[in-house]
Amino acid sequence: MQFLPLILLVVLFYFMLIRPQMKRNREHRDMLGKLVKGDEIVTSGGIAGKIADIGEAYLAVEVADNVLIKIQKASVASVLPKGTLKTL
Image (cartoon, rainbow, N blue to C red; front, side, top):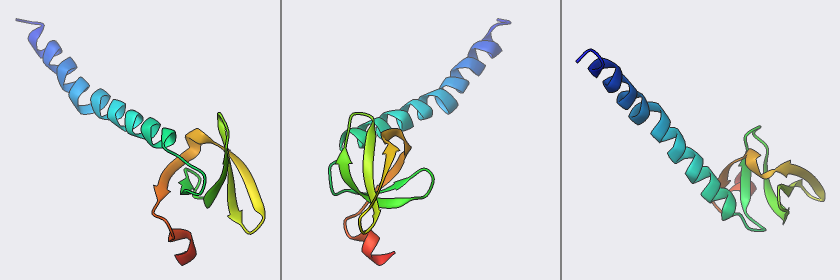
């Protein structure tokens, strides 16, 4: 009986912290797997651009006309709807 609060704490910790983090990681990994050339993205640093080329671990992102930067795939924070960059 004295271990019951400890067991409840571990179960609560799992459902409140570990499980949601695993779900976010899975969603991010799925998003990175679905990236295609021409997608408009925002990086974790706040840089918005259009994917010009996709490599194994890096992306070439066009941030302005004829300006390409290389970023790691893992730094992509979100994919924007098509045409969003024109309105920014």
